[in-house]
Image (tube, rainbow, N blue to C red; front, side, top):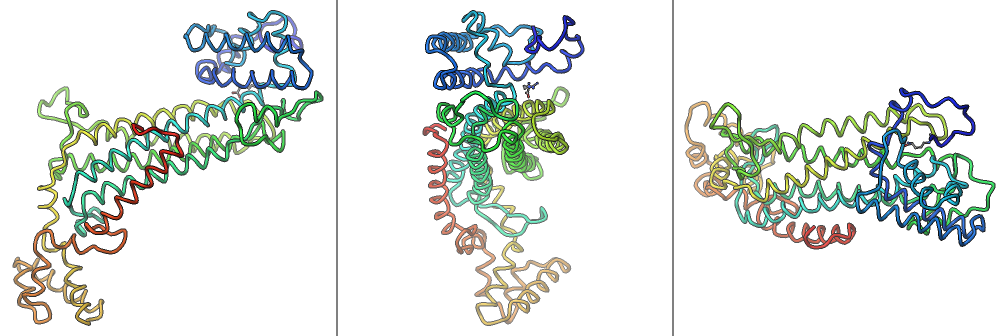
Amino acid sequence: MSLWQGRFGSEAPAEELLEYTVSLAYDRRLAADDVAGSRAHVRGLAAAGILSDGDARILLTALDRVSGELEAGTLEFRPGEEDVHTVVERRVTEMAGDVGARLHTGRSRNDQVATDLRLFAKRELLVVGRRLLRLQRVLFDAARAAGDAYLPGYTHLQRAQPVLLSHHLLAHGWALARDVDRLLATRRRLDVSPLGAGALAGSSLPLDPDLTAAELGFAHRFENSLDAVSDRDFVAEALFDLALAGVHLSRLGEEIVLWASDEFGFVTLADAYATGSSMLPQKKNPDIAELARGRTGRLIGHLAGFLATLKGLPLSYNRDLQEDKEPLFDALDQVALGAGALAGLISTATFHTARMQEAADTPYAAAVDLAEWLVEGGMPFREAHGVVGALVRDALERRVPLAELVEAHPALGSDALALLAPGVAVTRRTTPGGAGPVAVAVQLGRFAAALEREASDLHADDSG
Ligand code: ARG
């Protein structure tokens, strides 16, 4: 039976209507939050004297039992039921008898679903945040294990300057730290209870939205009932945060794909985190990293699609808003899964530091060090840049070692030669936040502190 029978005649809803509008297949994930919201609502009704204490007790007991069934997996979701709110109310009514008919007093599914989804998001954003924290810990551990190993740093995907491997790994870590920070900020902003807004305008009954907000652990209640039932900014924000986190997983994935290629040869994946080819026996493929990259398209699509859903909506609630759930659920799931899979992949990967160092140790990688050495001797940088640039061109054109030319140059000579020795250039990146060992040691300490702050903000234990 539908929830609006009175207004309608005996004609049953059309099959196509149900098929097209039903949301139970996915909004069942809100069941626990729907029960929580309903509990708070019952307490609010009792406090307002709208429900007798006896009736309130009956409803709360029924809600407890629904909650028990939910945990046990025995709550029945019947085909033909429209949404999770229908299921919970139906089951409460089966248990509470006539009193069940009082549950929805002063409430609409419009404030109800907004309440449920905010409760859900408050919890699940922390879950994703913890996954991202775990990945950061894995990057941190890999960074510490990398010691003084270095590799070429790239710009334009051309070898630019050597950087410590730990520095490179932590660069991804800091991006993920910002993701967590954004998720937490979104969570703070969404911490507002819409319950009590009713369908759109509040109620004639003496309900107290502050009381139900406190009951549900929300920091605030809504200020405007129209806004309360139509605001899905928190979904759009979460979708942005998750899309950007996805972009970060994607960029990390892309580097793993490159590094795992024979051309780079910087990393070998553990068998458990790689896949084979059905045809080519020699292949070992980085599918997790590729999907971290590929699936991000979907996350960006969720954000763009949902903004398009919102943009033309008049106040207040419109059924279009039902389209908030699937993208949000999927984005939360995919970022959590991607972060988990990449954490496993990185923690079991073998980094080939000798190969990295070989790639970083071309003399050209120290070109800027030669120029800066001239600067220290008083030469203007632009001039120094020109001197070294000309030497590089000469070395390439005449196929002579750069070292020879450096040694023969009157402004450089054998003293400058030491700069070209393997492993020297990276040690010269000493400025704060730079890529050399001295600066990175400081950075590791700061990153450790950032992880601790995150863990406490996410209420995460040590295992993440
Ligand atoms: N399934 C709906 C949603 O997700 C629940 C609210 C329905 N409200 C209504 N007035 N039809 O938005």
